[in-house]
Length: 161
Ligand code: FES
Ligand code: FES
Image (cartoon, rainbow, N blue to C red; front, side, top):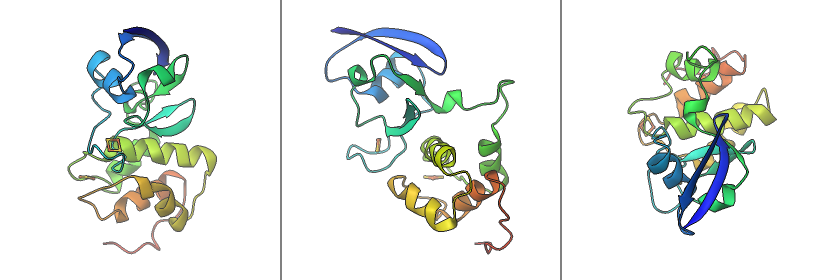
């Protein structure tokens, strides 16, 4: 077992992990941050996306030890300071960007990373960026709409599905 130390949602955390422990396992099983989901074992679904030093990362593809010293943000760290939904999360709710919600933490984390690097993405840019996030419920349409709305764009031209 090896000691790992990182900052998660603004708090310093540490723990003993095996060399094979994945970051997602450390977050969920050691820290109890179960908002980060595991939807596959093939690195395809994106339900496990978190931010590592500001980059969107599939936390099932990274060892916990590789995050040594990193700043990690999970969906639990996305709420506003008062604990309410962030504007991006609110947009998902307002535009029905979720149904079962299983993919939603990963979608929100990927969308937040996109908006950080591209504050007004086009519909095509959003769809391209989310190509690593799979949703089995929504057909993606309302997710795209929510992200466009969160970035202050007019979504009235996007036809209702
Ligand atoms: S759990 Fe599916 S990509 Fe990580
Ligand atoms: S809302 Fe169910 S998988 Fe996306």
